Length: 168
Image 1: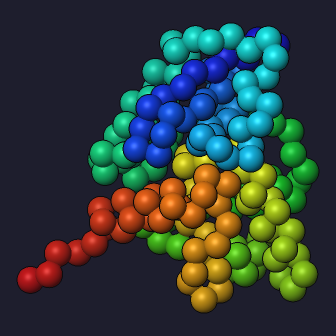
Image 2: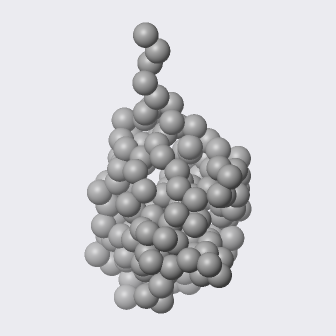
């Protein structure tokens, strides 16, 4: 099946986007992210056209004008557990954070499985649009992000600034 890729400039650097032949987004990575290794896949075609909507939505998000994405997603095959974790990520509201333990509890697991949840989050191929940056340590500390903690801090700052209630 044909795959496509492009890059898109943004405040976090040049994002690498890939999609399948139907135009569904298969990955979104940031410069230096571990998941970017091996992307784009051999034989993938550089073409900006399939990414027009992704570009619009990303630009609006970065401008503080969008709080969710409506893109069609087609991440690579994954275990049922990873798919459950990724679906739970999609449910974290804009401008909020949850702990790894809270996310684990939301899919009905706990204890040692929290580490597995962290692994599934780390394997998320759709950074930003699947908001793994909204998951924090149990004490609220910023831990783990494939795009780097500086980018995680920036994304959370963007979302908190937009959801902050003015004083007065």
